[in-house]
Image (cartoon, rainbow, N blue to C red):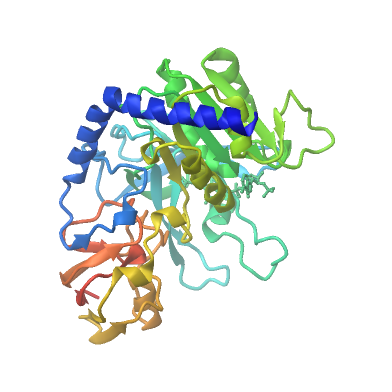
Length: 421
Ligand SMILES: NC(=O)C1=CN([C@@H]2O[C@H](COP(=O)(O)OP(=O)(O)OC[C@H]3O[C@@H](n4cnc5c(N)ncnc54)[C@H](OP(=O)(O)O)[C@@H]3O)[C@@H](O)[C@H]2O)C=CC1
């Protein structure tokens, strides 16, 4: 496509977005305002923490705290045997809450020390990878090895624990589904799902839901992996494509192996990039959902914005401490005057000087023990009561925060602050 043609296309997209706003905007804005009404005293919302995902009230029939589940079934999902699905049923036998496709579960794990010492407590979030069911949940977990070329760095403790020690019959402590990255049920726009590697899982939940409900929206799935060995749930995805005329499957292999068949196993060689989206998608307006490795998110999310896609139509998810720049407020800009942080139980008062990225880091630097898990505002483990003062968030919290509390891992002080720590 020439630059001129693309410029015309994008101008058209923007015009359509404006026109579309009249049709869909009012309803969506109402939903957004309702959701933002949730009281969160003591938190100053930073302008850049709005993000593209809208907080939603999803917990009406969810449980609070941990609930016990038993692993009913394990299924290997890729040629390399590095992704395993775990089917979980509640031991209390009560029905499960309906979650929003795209949400995740939070696991509280006790991982035994190989040397026989005290177990390590670890909190991890894993996306639900199937449509909501009343009797079981499914998560699909990739074994995380040590980073390439760094054998001295420990492999992923929780993912390896799942793969090596969580068997059929194992019991797990699980918090209710949560997360603000999920299908926008109110939108009627066609949907573009963009997944990299194990980032497929929340999008698979969305896809399976749309397929099950025979949703009339057209759906494109762009799915990037290196080669067939990493292609998760290949047969399932192809079955969905063959049985749902509204689903368009575009698999990209970055490094296809000699046996991988172009046009059969995969449709494109290389990374998913904005040019591929431009070539493939019809003229129009879409809801984009993106989940994959950080490099992919950092490239594609801004590229969609630059191509004229409105923020409210770009939904993205990336677990891990390094979240997208677009969602982060410049930490130094959040406090204009010197502020002091007092940890009341520890009796320590520290001057905040922006050398720490978060209140969690500040507390840890002072040797104050804080429970933490995802370090990205998702699992809620580091939730702490604010005795006085206000915090500002670097990104929108995914965990629901109790009134008068804050998530230390994504918070910095906005004023002098006293924390119940
Ligand atoms: N709900 C959630 O938030 C979830 C999030 N995730 C996240 O998804 C990520 C997926 O990790 P993993 O399976 O290891 O991914 P991989 O590292 O295996 O990457 C998947 C594919 O994406 C390609 N890729 C890398 N950089 C880019 C880029 N800039 N643009 C386009 N494609 C790119 C890779 O190519 P190459 O070979 O060149 O690297 C590879 O083909 C995890 O980091 C995790 O944080 C996972 C599950 C759930």
